[in-house]
Length: 607
Image (cartoon, rainbow, N blue to C red; front, side, top):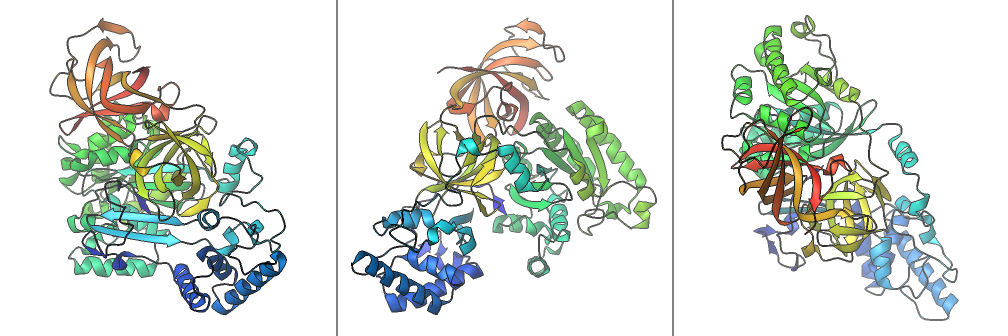
């Protein structure tokens, strides 16, 4: 499970030497997997015999080949060293089987034993975990025993003979997914509607969370006086989220249905975290809107000031067309059909106005706390007497998977940046178009600098390639981390993304209280970017349906209008035209904590 967090602000120059880091001991924060613990134990035993005469990379490879048995690993290292000495007529050398004897050690350390880092930063607590690949993940060519034989070391996770031109990406995607297309799903809704509990319980019923972990959450939540939040803690991982009882950031994990591989994004519902919600919604293909069926609670979320309307409007404006409405907490109203009909009637009228087709909106009665109608159809007689439709999981499974822009030039919007333990650093984000392979050069915009892709990780699994739709972590080298910000776009150096501070766009104004005039200040939300901007010019007012120009150079714009405007940002931003890249051509405008407009980029102005 991963989370979108900007951790660039932290000081990594100390390289974890200070014992008291962010207010507590670093030692207390390490999360070491059982395999890693075995490796460390084996390495310690080998070091007591060999001292510092052999590189860590050699010992690590030997340990993994010998199943972490220190005695077998020692024999393997000593026998290889002896053989090398004989072959070369020299003293014992520090080398890795399969590499030339004079291979530089930094090549071994950086390429042969890649590290996959996971980081979560919350307040002052920092947690890290490192997964060392098992021996069957290391290319077999590394294990050549004859040092005189010419040898090349392929980039980790990438076969030596595979070039980008030779990769049939569509066939590879079909093979990787086993016929199951990828679906990016965001869960939205008003605060306290039960989104995290609903999806946490669904993940538990699917077996993505084991009983031991769930029991731990139950005990911890009871101790904290929040017994009903146990399932929410599956997705709300940070201490602050658990203390406050609300989701603050976008939690991300993966599960599978009968016909789909689903990337789940749990978005925050509180109005203070709408920018984080937009980040999640901008990366979604479909959405689940959760509403509270309790008396008065649905009304509070749906009426003015609630987030139900705003969330639905936002996801539709950001390109989501298929929506499942989970009418949650139905057990609290005794599964009454009248209450369900009342809620769906009010929602249906609004969602139609927001741009959703009735045929693409589906309503499912559920209970996140009891688990009814989540994974399997409910057997509660009070519900089955009037509802015979699908469970929530069945509805998610029936969503249509979108067509991915895998044939277009590579584009990835950065949602997080953090330091890797090895050379280089890591960025996370969703690939919006094209595909990427390890070993390739990519261009970062707007800094306009190239770097190398050293590793690709998808859901904590190291891969040699990834394609449009994947939420990945890239380990990159050859560039300073200081130059990368959340919101930067990595792209194909041969076909880079446009960068500008001025662009023209067609916008649709929502229910705004203050008319927009020339020079009006706004906050531009574009994927993971949140950038101060100004409405520089009011070009024209358009007809909503036909797009015909009704008025040129209007004095102001009021609610409900469709218009062409020119926007200027404080700093350069990476944009694409909507007609070329729908995924990269949409944006939202906010003003004083409210979303006032949605727009699409029609023209990029040179700066």
